[in-house]
Length: 393
Image (cartoon, rainbow, N blue to C red):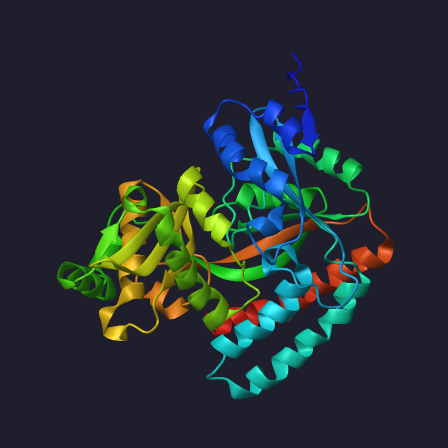
């Protein structure tokens, strides 16, 4: 007897908020998309993330809703976009800043690498690498995925290639630990794997992380700190400028202005519509720490972190924030996606590294654009990945 063939699921792309609203299902994912994506479609991405200029569309596959960020190629060799929607920014400008921050103990490599990265700029510009459709891109550093089976990928891929014949198709934030099957499925369809960064994962559900010396010290700090946590329900709109300032000071001023520049409207919407669950470290009436996390499909991550860098380091604000994040993940039975950076700090607290990739499809594009992606992938695999692993970045 022949095995029944599952018919492909219909895919609908909605290009405006009114059409999208009529198609959103009455499910938790549909409700979240209604609260987050419809305002972005109606008001534009820059109302919420100042350095992201993209057209927002939605892909509907059954009850599944995925945001699409459609980005045009820049006219110059500098895109001005955040790295979450720009390959130019990610692999040149943002990477140069990462090298400056992370390779301070390797002065020769720190001096040479930025010039090598600069050599990528004309390659990416000529290949129109920024002309992409990003699938499931929520404009955070880490995008959390619903289950994407071959029965979903097959019609989705076909619909995107047909609808966007001049754009590369990109799935960001995929790592070998959490998305092995999806990575394999996309490879089978001809997607090129571009190394993105080394990220850290922690499974706190058995509380083994609490036996680590650094975590024990963090727990001791938490027991004696004068700070307390204000939950999402305790926060008010008049707190949002302070929380935004804490994020900006850490992620934009200390690290890189190529990180997403979330606007005050974003923070206000996050509080009002639960775009992310917010919490703040408070001492008396002053807020000195920010934590904003999201959860999906058993994974939890925090795209919003900040603290007052003027507070003495002995107060341990970052330690308190990361400890609270681990505890929330444990309480909710989630794996914690701790993103990238602060490698030694995360390792000593039990997080393990894994390689993250962006998967890019370009077979429907001109040969020179396909060649650009292949060359970039080879360069990343042969040079950048070994350096990242050698220096535990």
